[in-house]
Image (tube, rainbow, N blue to C red; front, side, top):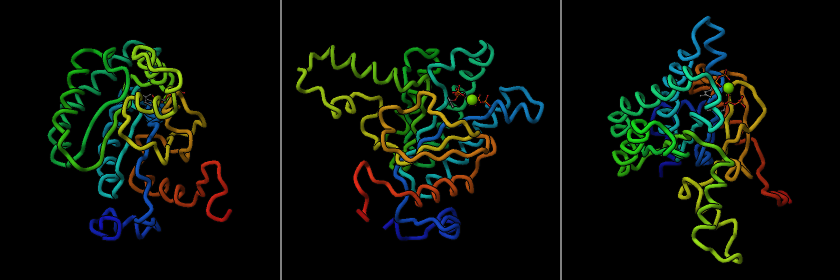
Length: 253
Ligand code: IPE
Ligand code: IPE
Ligand code: MG
């Protein structure tokens, strides 16, 4: 029903842009890169780029939800990002916590299910608590899932899954791909159909290594603070032009 009804302005604009509303990616994951470059190009401090990036996320989340995307995973802080200067790290931690607290009401009102994926117990306790609260307060919502990858690393996630398998004493014969998938941070989410990277780098940066085996990749030169609804549409259009084969021959085979 939802797939055929052109029922809101975002979907109207999407259809006009040529998007097939019946073939949307269920899960889009975004490497939100380029905040620093955006700030530098304007002569601003890097943290102001991150703040602008937060505002972009608000808008893109709303657009994706209205469009009918089931899940949006966003890379907010990697396990490698601790290597940055202490002032940037602490500024980011403060910004994420402030955003989590400020957005709680809006997320509830907009029917968003928010959660976080990563080594959350290594975060400042007040941020960890804010993320837990976000998850609990939006648990009953039925709209788009916002999955915040914070202190996230793809390798760390696989290590954590393997640790869990060893600790559980799972017999060797039961160590399967499904067993590993079941121990990832968000096992209930579908694997991403589309991974978007802003700001042009052609690399993975340790994002969703396990789940991205057959994700389609889309890289735009646009920095994250300049990303918007029309950029989202372009990514979805590019995705819809791809032929996914999953190792087989595809439909024409
Ligand atoms: C992405 O922007 C946000 C985070 C990694 C937290 P960057 O801060 O990496 O921006 P650039 O790559 O320096 O432009
Ligand atoms: C990836 O961006 C991490 C996030 C977007 C949070 P980085 O800016 O950290 O990646 P590299 O260092 O350019 O690979
Ligand atoms: Mg970067």
